Amino acid sequence: MSRTASVPSGTTPANPRSRVILASLVGTTIEFYDFYVYATAAVLVFPRLFFPAADETTSLLASFATFGAAMIARPVGAVVFGHYGDKFGRKATLVASLLTMGIATFLIGVLPTYENIGWFAALLLLVLRLAQGFALGGEWSGAALVATENAPKGKRAWYGTFPQLGAPLGFIIANGIFLTINAVLPNADAPGTPSQAFDDWGWRIPFLFSAVMVIIGLWVRLRLVESTTFQKTVDRGAVRKLPLGTVLKSNWRELILGTFIMLATYVLFYLMTNFTLTYGTKASDVDAATANAQAAAEAAGNPFNEEAFRAAFYPGLGYTYTDFVLMLIFGVVFFGIFTLVSGPLADRFGRRKTLIVVTVLIIVFGFLFVPMLGGGTPAVILFLVLGFALMGSTFGPMGALLPELFPTNVRYTGSAISYNVSSILGAALAPIVALWLWSSADGSPFWVGVYLSAMGVLTLVALILSKETKDIDIDR
Image (tube, rainbow, N blue to C red; front, side):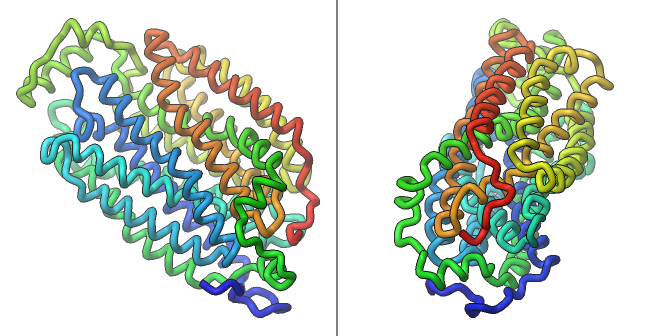
């Protein structure tokens, strides 16, 4: 790659508003689609197909551990893609991250299962999951920089919400495809649960479909031209040989603050999407759950220990997969709406003030888990709407805030590291911690809510210690 950006010095970049919005939106939609497809499969089929164990909890924990392992790879991807993005420009790194994610997701769709090759199947799944995490480590920051560095004055937070909008759109597309497949391949013996055909081959379709979406994303991103913001950095000779070293030496405070500013967002994000799906579809009655588990074991020709199953059982809400995913999709619509609404608010009132208010509301929300999740279907739906509305309100401004913390020559690296290190502290641990707290409380989500509130307090402290970035010079 050439060190010189694609735009001749002193010219206006050929990136019209529609191209900037589409390029920043389509890539993150695909990336989050791929991630959600895995997250859904991690709850729905992977515990049985890749991590069979003596009890359901062990299988689910193993599946969640692989899900969380991708978060460990994300900071590595942030450093690698950030290095090239800060030295050679944003465009090539965005194309590379999208290709890496797409290939890894497609290959998951053709993996043999435990039944075919034993635990080697789980190892291959882990490798591809790490590749997904590595790719996502470079995707978000590049998309956020494309949006904010090409934004008109006073509209950076608004433009920054478009890559963020990829999260709810990816969720809706991924789960919509799973619902469609589940409807086409129904389980006549246990309606609302995956059928044998779904387990055999139906779950592979969403992973294979990602190839189509990647082709569309590549076509959009290859038409991008580098921003004048990056070109100015090249022209004044400010490109750093080792951006990582520079950001660690000169911007370590911003790295720490950015990491903790994102923390509550990540925890809320994965509790609302991953934990709620598990909790919502887990059986609420031990007798019915035991009967279903015994029938499944007998059908598969496996031994069944009723006493051990009952001892390890803890209840959920007992919804069918189809019913609860429809409720989730309804909630995610509010995720998208409030993501877009948060941008203009952050442009008007400032990123810091907006996020302080939202974070306080997240802390309060954590104490509503028990009364709302235990209040019947209307209360559960309201819980999902409130949680996803808060998710959009906190996630939207991050598209501008994290890039604004850093100067142009280390902006890709700095924002990517903060965003993705926070994924380890928040997203990688959240599903496992939540599952442990839930099982330890014999099925009560009380401590899961307290966990969210505690992470919200850490984010609130980081926001109080930070400075407003609304009026900084993006070309600095």
